[in-house]
Image 1: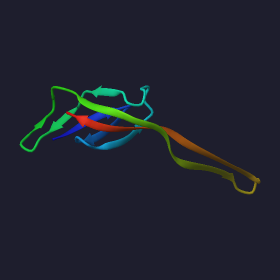
Image 2: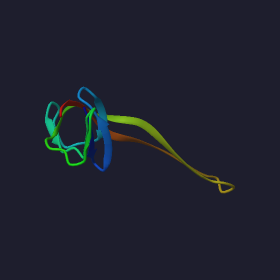
Image 3: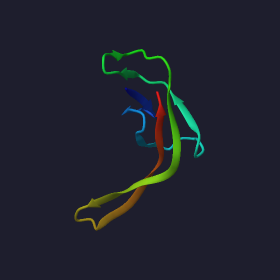
Image 4: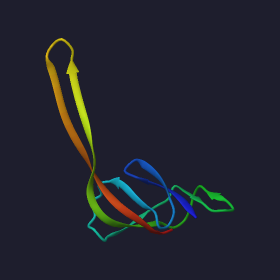
Length: 96
């Protein structure tokens, strides 16, 4: 069974046992979050108004890969280089 869930305006297609990197959540490591699915997909049919919740467990908080932002104005001797690492939360889908 699969489900389409929405976390922080992003959608994920998940099934039990999946591990996801989602935007940082205000939860402690080891907490279990209940998320209402948007769509439930079974082998026989697809339900647009599913009942129940998807339970995910917070595994850790970490930072994503570094993104380098480079700005330059030609012929003006202007260069600016910045880096950014997005805060992420790693979760595991427990049950649906």
